[in-house]
Figure (cartoon, rainbow, N blue to C red):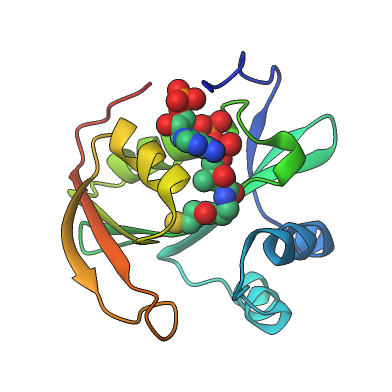
Length: 159
Ligand SMILES: CC(C)(COP(=O)(O)OP(=O)(O)OC[C@H]1O[C@@H](n2cnc3c(N)ncnc32)[C@H](O)[C@@H]1OP(=O)(O)O)[C@@H](O)C(=O)NCCC(=O)NCCS
């Protein structure tokens, strides 16, 4: 099944402390090993200059988020999630496109990310954007749960 028409009027905004409960709900829904409330709270309270937390909002509802870092011309996509009810509407593409534009604007030269070997939807998404496998991390998500390392150069491939 291909993505439906993209959801209209999406906005890409910095995540704020007031978004925390909505984000945690999505985080817990999407991941077997979710990031903790403490981690989000501290990151939002004392932001690091190289870390970026952004949400996609649709009519006052958070419909996805992305976390990435840019340090010494190297960027990492650290987290990306879309709630189940909003999937296949182009929200992840929108989040990734928006993040890649910021990375390019801040002189990021290459982008890396880890994705579980078993997570085919995410791998298809990243491949569409030109990411390719450059390594494997054994037991990255737990015992026998390996991750691929994906990489792409910064020329932006907007889909
Ligand atoms: C992966 C995820 C972020 C995709 O979000 P989404 O908003 O549904 O994705 P989009 O609608 O923007 O789809 C973009 C592309 O992703 C791929 N894709 C997404 N879901 C897919 C699925 N269920 N099966 C196959 N491909 C899929 C497709 O290539 C799709 O493009 P296409 O529709 O033109 O074929 C979402 O499924 C999710 O939150 N999963 C759980 C968390 C997660 O795995 N995060 C990534 C960690 S590395």
